[in-house]
Length: 88
Image 1 (cartoon, rainbow, N blue to C red):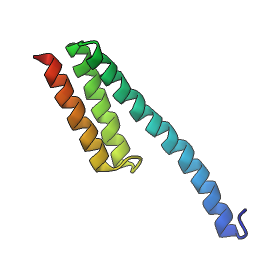
Image 2: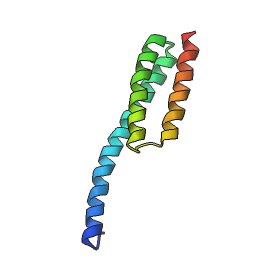
Image 3: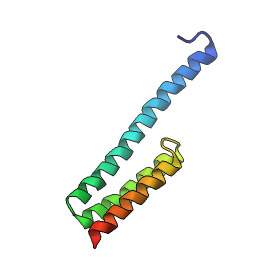
């Protein structure tokens, strides 16, 4: 429990930030899962369209420090390689 005004404010801020970041993290996971599902179905055109949106979501999350920038880059790289593999 917070014992000072400052600690109470920090607790309030942390709750608000958690809600925002939790939803953003969920959005990134959903976008990545959609691409992976399209890859499993061998639907190259759908996967490439979904990849574009997933890249935007990942970049946005990385810029807002929801996920680490290298984690976003790694995920985008792996998804791009998988989409290229099924596009052949």
